[in-house]
Image (cartoon, rainbow, N blue to C red):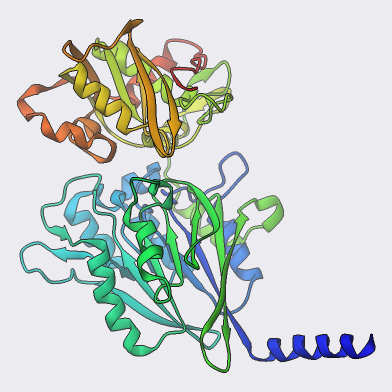
Length: 486
């Protein structure tokens, strides 16, 4: 028995003696949430986590840091860059919301970043060259482990770009890998602003294809965009991790290599909640974040009788009280048969009680206006169906639906408009926000509709309408059940 114990102990010592670890911290979709929200999250908690960990590490961000709060909006993203510089980020890629302040705004952010901006698929349209202050990849050394980080930018800007263009992500990845591999890194990490959540049977996306096609050459893929938490998912041995949103958590990725050969042995991830009561806060970072706080936005604008949640209490319902409230307010203003809003437009829920203007900006940070479009039932049915999986991306007022899911596909879809079954040949007036009407992200189908057939309704923004609704008296949360999975 002693011999077995000694042999096991020696093997443990032997394996440990030749293993080396490197730690990567990953955030994504922070959206300017510098401060704790409802006691959770914030940059000071992240700084505390970094301080308590290993002295050497990589800090990476997956994009969408530039828009989402009044601080980022009023500074055109520059305050987010300032904070990331202060936190010591080593690299980030470009999300769709980095384009919120148009091409000049993005260029200014790139010039201010003290971290590497990695986007292998991102080019200047006119010259075909890489934009200044960007690179396809960067080699880092962490605790003696050589790591190549390749970035892939999101190809669907929130605001259309005239200056920049994108190449196909896997082609760009192949080109970057071919160059990076010449330096013989022990591990390759791909930083993307797209999500494995959008990869499903029968409809794969390029994020999942990185695992299927580049296993052995890529070792970890760190994603974002969908605001999902994904940990320790593997495709052909390639680790996939995503860190949620709004500075509420950070992923800690540990890479273990054979110190003798330099080859990667294992990659694993762990989600660390940024709960200041657990992590503590870094006081210097807290003070710096406070110096970025915008004055004059904490005025109370209304009262909620009850919370308006960004989650549904019933798992069979894919609609939420928060999304339904936006759709209901939009429909009342537009006079449309159906109002459609993208679920990504609402960022957080609202607590019961007094609501400040800051709360509303955090809730719906965009300046979208209301647009009406006449479509036929066939268009509406296709739009609804395509938005349901792998996660629901649209919400409705004036429309209800039921469906089943089988093998990652929508089955038995039934739709009612104002209580009557949808008819393919009938015309319907659809109200939506200007982002969706312009063909942004979830509204790509609207690109097929001529601009002259899109009618802006008034001058008020969606958020302005929400503030008006609060000003008229205490607001209750709308019921859910408009989107029901059978």
